[in-house]
Image (cartoon, rainbow, N blue to C red; front, side, top):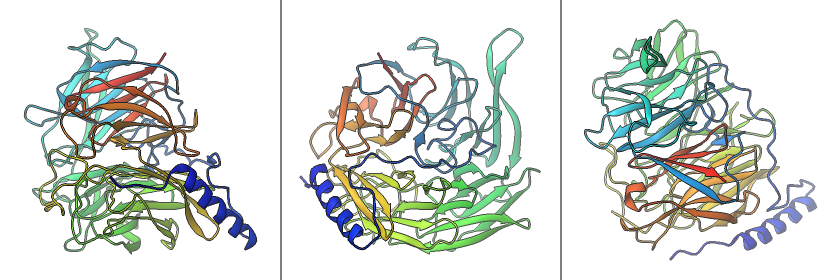
Length: 480
């Protein structure tokens, strides 16, 4: 078993650094101090509610929500067994949950409309469903809710769809295509959209295996092919500064200017010699994260794929200048998850060795083929001379963690069992203190492999419930 520094040791090392910085006249927050939330980014006017309109909470992919979650007390569990893997859970201003799932039979992407106020039921839990044209493994996974509560998604036929929901004259809910834009002129045949988000001007940005583009408010698509060999295998993020895209080789920021997609800056990162076990591509596993203490999007961060230990890389959003590069997550280590970012703090969860049942076509073999799932989480703070680790723990997060500024807690799902994973491993809902990385409470979740959360993202709803997708449906976790 790989041993990592304990939270106590991390605090002591951080204290030494704080003293050193003070001597140098720089100063910094003492390690282990309660994190400061700073100023959030201005709300994107073309998205739905903050914290619930994208897989990662907002356009900047911060994985931060202003909504309080279930807290540290006892919880009750309800299950929605949809016989589908449900990676995308969103909630609009009408309070209905929109889930984008992939059916076990046929792997068809399907939209489910769910009333969170209604009791969970084994059958008929969805108010309405809508099947999308099938694409690649990651195609149809990333979507968002716009400011009219419509799901914006690209299907396997390369159509950008806005799906609304309403009741028909008989009072039955239905999901309808309100508008569509044909992207077949911008997305090559056989390619699929893997990232999708709007910018602050209302352009809808998309990224595919080899193309970055934007659909303007007139419905015209503009695109730019990536350099040969570069691919996008994660989602993308936007801020008032631009659109951040991480390829398998570099981090970019783009803007749409004078009717064309332009590169603001490009920064190479260490992609390592191979794809690591527990990652879905040979390169970073990060959706880029915008964050910062002043504007909420001062910086943009990813975790690279350096071998054997990965680094958190933080850049200035306006210029692309590097703020810091810091080794994280032990040796060996890796992460397929987007970092949490808020004010001066970044939280990274390790996925090295996680047993994904499938990887995208062309991902290449993992080296080694498999490895123990060691997990681990780390908090890193930006300081006046770079950045430093605040704490590191051994939590084996099996989902994308989310931080609530409403109650000051981190929420995730942890995997139980030996380092070498088996179908008999169990799972628990976990509440973590972001100040020192300590686990405040765990609550067992039902089942074993049938409720694998597979590093999928959760959702804190406006009633304080935590919804988590699994490989067979959705779990609703509610504070008592």
